[in-house]
Length: 179
Image (cartoon, rainbow, N blue to C red; front, top):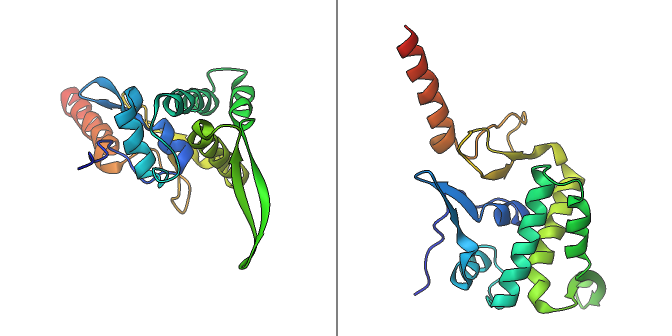
């Protein structure tokens, strides 16, 4: 039996889901990709487990992509775009023609780069469609990221039930202590 994905936020686009393989739980940073079992969970969650092996090389390459994407999204490294581009150098899109018509197929220099490349390529799609909707949770103690799909684009929390509720409770506690 395979383990369930333990992360608090699922269903984000693949690049942000890769960033969300690190999360806080009871004040401690958790890391799903600390081993290949966690990589297997992440691959399965993103529909990649049938295409790629959850081995040490794939894990290392996926961590390279996660660190590059984190630096890009969190704006912590002036060379972040070059780091993401270096991940993208390990694959390409090949045009195909099938019985169903034109198509595209991803190809990789090494299959161990596949999940990393797919996450980096997915991030390009987010940047093309709505770069201003790529967000970090506004809660100080949260490290999660999300793609804001709200109608007016004002979502602040990874989850209203988790971080949004904590923020509301903190504000309420501060008001009652002042009063």
